[in-house]
Image (cartoon, rainbow, N blue to C red; front, top):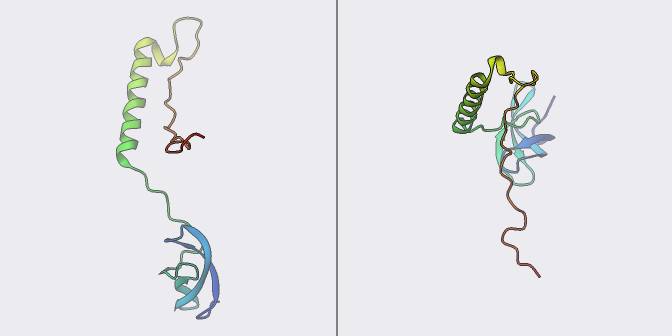
Length: 109
């Protein structure tokens, strides 16, 4: 049971971390709105749970198309993805995600 002004740990949307919050509004016996004690932003009480990550639908569609094309190419090479030589399973190449260089923009001494 929370009271107005009590300290509660919650996920702050602005800080993007679990921080100390003060209870601002109650709904029944539970906290409804809280205020971050670090950045002073008000938001709904989230029970210390971060929102789900945002997924770009274009990237998901592109990955699905690549997987379908690779599966079609493997099916043309042999039935059910099995290569003709020795019965080994054909491997589908997977691209590694691009990694930004940490040294970019730094001057070398």
